[in-house]
Length: 437
Image (cartoon, rainbow, N blue to C red; front, side):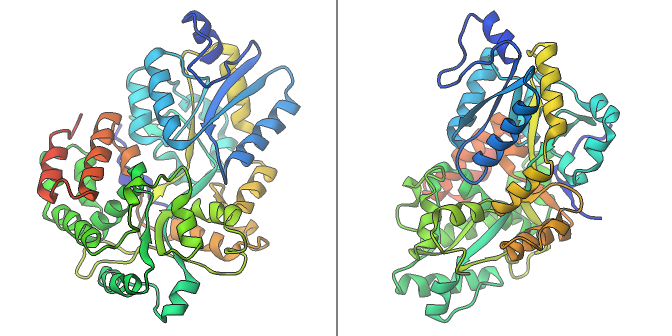
């Protein structure tokens, strides 16, 4: 079978028994599953926590003899917890993730089950989901995860009130972004908010710049393991432009000490301390939940990331999460695996779809757009659906497309690039050294 390529994400038309075997009550901060339960780890916080909890509660109410035991973690803590759990063979039955390179590492280690035959036997479950959502779930032509939840492109958000007060318009090119920077700084407003301590937030900038300058093949060569791929002239240009923006004070002062988990980056935007923010579409739900009447009053603007003058990339393309992914641990008992699969068939029912739509999310269900019009957030939801459906390429986030080893090196070097402790060529050299690892 042809190796899965991250560019094929184009849209268009376990725990209880394993923990006992290890003589442990489970990793710190978790509640282990009991007999008749399947453990499930996923993310906490708005906007998704209440929706995930609701899906589990409905399933448990309908299935008293086969329960899901939920454990919730903040984003960065969750990644560390998973790494430790998989290393110790103490992962839960159901593992929430992003697919791609992280999933491949579990597959290569024999830690998650092949679900290909299960999907073949449960065609209605598969057929109702966006075809593009299966890209990050597919390794070596086989499906190892259940696509779930919502499609999440990265969006350039902006504060309409700030823009109106300065009588400026949203940028339509990289040149216009750079022209806006001194105007906002002169008004003592940060051009961009950024939770730089989390590192993956910085990465989103490079994902778009690489694509807009050189097109889909630039990171595609990295993904395919081509020697020296990070030294592509388009990559060096993108890295240089990134540091140009940083040197021009394009980001909030002290951005490297701000975490995404705290949502402080979101607050800077809705409080008018920053004019713009590049973030996942899930940010809409966070600002809606925590920003008072900011979203309700129509002060939040959003556009797809603009093109770069002379660039080869298509400004209609996007990057982000084509879905979220649930795998089943190979360590789980047969009974736990059966509970997990039954749970999978219950996901994204009408209630859950409605709950995701209320958070500003677009469910990865075919025809979900028909349910968006009645939402008070219809304009944003239709925007997200349009971005996802009009993109010829919906590329996966880099740290999820790459192996965990390469992804950690990537995030480490991105942090150094943003603090300007390394230059673009040094970044490229460092990353070329881990290609294929």
